[in-house]
Amino acid sequence: MASVSSSILPMLMVVLMCSHVGGEQGSYHKINIHSLLPSKVCSSFKANFVLNSESASLNFTRLKVTYRHGPCSPLRSHPTPLHEQILDEDRSRVDSLRRRIAAAATSAKLDRQRGSQVGSKIPVRPGSSVSTGNYVVTVGFGTPKTDQTVIFDTGSDITWIQCQPCVAYCYEQQDPIFNPSASSTYANISCSSTYCSDLDTSGCSSSTCIYGVQYGDNSFSIGFFAQDTLTLSTAGVIPKFPFGCGERNRGLFGKAAGLMGLGRGKVSLVTQTYQKYGGVFAYCLPPTSSSTGYLTFGAGYPSSNVKFTPMLTDASAPTFYYLNLMAISVAGQRLPISARVFNDAGTIIDSGTVITRLPPTAYSALRSAFRQAMSSYKMTSALSILDTCYDFTGHSTVSIPKVALQFGGGVTMELDLSGTLYVGNQSKVCLAFAANGDDSDVGILGNVQQKTFNVVYDVSKKVIGFGPGAC
Ligand SMILES: *[C@@H]1O[C@H](CO)[C@@H](O)[C@H](O)[C@H]1NC(C)=O
Ligand SMILES: *[C@@H]1O[C@H](CO)[C@@H](O)[C@H](O)[C@H]1NC(C)=O
Ligand SMILES: *[C@@H]1O[C@H](CO)[C@@H](O)[C@H](O)[C@H]1NC(C)=O
Image (cartoon, rainbow, N blue to C red; front, side, top):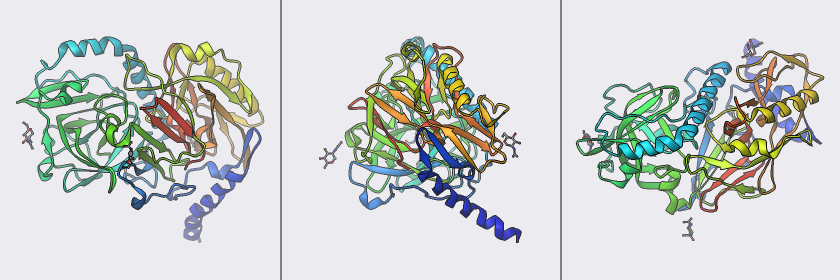
């Protein structure tokens, strides 16, 4: 009997999840509590954007996105981290992003002065930390191609994978480690190449360009800066794509083979494929860890209901995608927060930060409105950085106030329920927002809030778009 019920339970949860689609009304999400709980089986629930290679054209391509630790992930054998661990790592990513943005202006100047005289000892420049609360895609490197599952990150530029021979150290990864000598199209990049001077941090070893990236949590990757064929899909083949072939790698990358940099800098995949894809990419992050989303390159993304807000730039932190967050509403009521509060520090959108960070003044207004609307539920202790948590034990349905973010250009992003709450378990369900330390710290639109939206980045038109219900 026990084995029967345990095999039926996951299916039951999938069925229950469907019920929340029709259950939203007015300014509250009314949902069955079970729909919030993660499933252990992978389902393509709500995947209304079917992946198939036939529809790929020469300048549009799409990849399947999965949550790194969920049952759909190719890396799923990695032990699932605790929620506390994911959120603590998220804090360290945000701390390092913040330091990086604050230090950007001065360090950019220093790097230019150092130039290429650094030799093979690389003063690695701090990047952002790689939180484990991230999403992965599988792409092919080399000829013949070998599949590599990488974390995609809009908060960094360089793409790198671990490479053989790992002279000093490689961490354990799921796919076989890429072997450059087995690829007929692999080539080192020379120190005199402009690719090499475009790197934030580069060095030279017998005229071969060396790259180094260090992340805020002491993770790093160092190796040869190289080029090889990158295969995104059957039609999405990028010859001579410059990437880091890492021979010394250490850190919190789980079993991923490396990282795909989707920032705005010169070496990023977005910039390197500009001719083919026009500086356009889009993704949908799935509502649960047990469903799948997509990442597309080129203008063929699903365009219905996408509303665009200006993509802003900070010259001293050119990697990042800034946007203009102007207001927040809870249950249809706009919160009394002065626009100046959001303006002072600005806001970036980041695929690698989990929880949205707000200026403390804005967060405290959001928190008190949310708590008030939730006053009939029992509060419980904090979960790491999340201080507004509820114990839903004994409830079968709950009513959660809708939270909406307003951006420049008259764009309102009414968050999905999955983008409002962080669910530990039935007795620990938290508001998925946190405060920055200071109103002057940059705000971050994190990946929880982006769930189920078609998030479109168009670097040529300098706009960022949001379309609801895309996956
Ligand atoms: C790339 O450079 C390294 C170091 O100089 C060398 O060992 C390796 O053989 C080179 N690979 C190719 C394909 O030139
Ligand atoms: C995509 O390909 C079509 C047909 O070849 C062409 O008209 C269009 O300009 C291309 N778009 C980009 C962004 O290259
Ligand atoms: C629910 O999650 C919290 C936070 O991860 C944990 O401390 C608690 O033990 C869990 N409760 C149950 C019943 O699993």
